Image 1 (cartoon, rainbow, N blue to C red):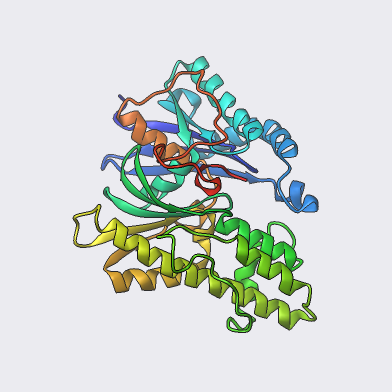
Image 2 (image 1 turned 30 degrees about the horizontal axis):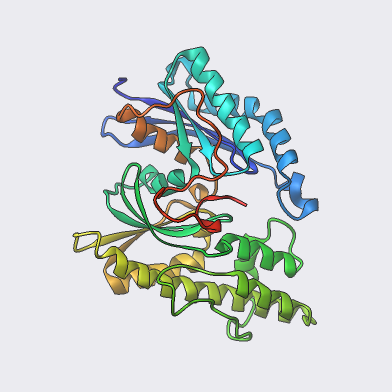
Length: 357
């Protein structure tokens, strides 16, 4: 094993083509040498959502160029790479296959180890890219396709405590934005609009807020938003609805995270426990603020990845690759793309638990 292993990470599970290189330094800490992400927003904007066939075509057209750019920025060559890690799922199978096969081809040509990575595990370990964190820790994974609480007990050791029973919180943000007439991807714009509105103007539902443990539900909230948008008369109403939606999400996550804290206390023996919030929605500053407040009340340490590492990226895939490389956990080149792939394989499959929509 190299004294300073270098891992090439590849991500193509949805509409971002991403390649990164990370290296372990003398202190055993990961160092991001390059992290290139090519977004497809302009391609899918006119359709109001991701079109799988167009996304796959864009991956094919860009992945060579993105890989070259990542190598150039890192100052390394392919011969310096010790292993190749590529996202194998969950996600859109036509998109996953592009990055996965690209990684396999590099692995075969270089005769270097290949590592198939669960995209969700990338988010789960993403805080390790910028902070020292030991197992176990409680994870809230919130993104466009996933919303779940997990006890992260070690590499490959996950216990799901709760998940969405219908839609993901990121999807609720995106659909609300669309109903408000905000151009795709509109989810991140909700927080900006909310600053101009009254968060108490609309009394929105909080599905299963007082039952179901730390499971989540957002379908009823989206239905309520749809009903209200039919009577929106001016920009002020739009701002007020955005603010009320943002506030409702904050209240739901505050209450459900508090329940998750209680469940996690039975798992961890540490007096001061850690709460990681990862995924695209973790970039929402107001959600970060309310969950930090909860952590201070409950004696948890709040940990968030940097904003640029919350969304889909290849550095987090390389991070998982690094952890697996050190344990000699390699995969065969016939490893398949998995559109559904849960972190806790013993958990009952639910829509929001392991499939990206």
